[in-house]
Image (cartoon, rainbow, N blue to C red; front, side, top):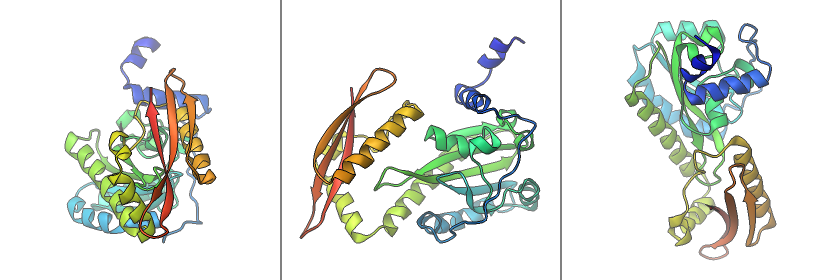
Length: 272
């Protein structure tokens, strides 16, 4: 099989990740596990996810599957494991709290690559760049803070096997949504009031809740940077950004007011 035909046989999201790894100089035979020891086990993300993952413990009991929660940098913060086979496999690889799933550390995987792509991401068997992970099939879904739009982390389900069916993909997307709602519940009453006010506004009904999935990483970072700067100004303002595909993003900051002295800034984006 030629290189071109081999590339055509690989799914585009996987090929894009492989290319990123190649550009970063990753060698499939030379990965080194990186484990951090300065974890915050009482972060808002961990607290939001705990009741959700506790419920999943029953669903995956006695199966060769595990559910893993990473933070926004891809570091494993919490894991829920099924039977002894998945526990032994995870421990043997060092997949314990503090383990870095970052694509720049271990190559293509359902956590680190989901963070970069900002969407649900599936990796099965030989699609993993690190040979030690090729025993697994996994799918990860980013957890996006409903109030800020920031990716807070990833929830991932991995199993000893080569495939993940549509039911599992739907389950992990639902799990990510439940963690997002839990994050909202843990936010302050002021933040929740402003969020409800924004959702009730006429403008909010015509703006997608998240960025379009076809945006490249550079465009997403540019939009997030613009949003942060607009919020920091603390007033109504607008900026236009020309995206890499030729579209123009109009980023608008508007004041949101609630009862009493409740005020905040909401940022929206239109694409044309």
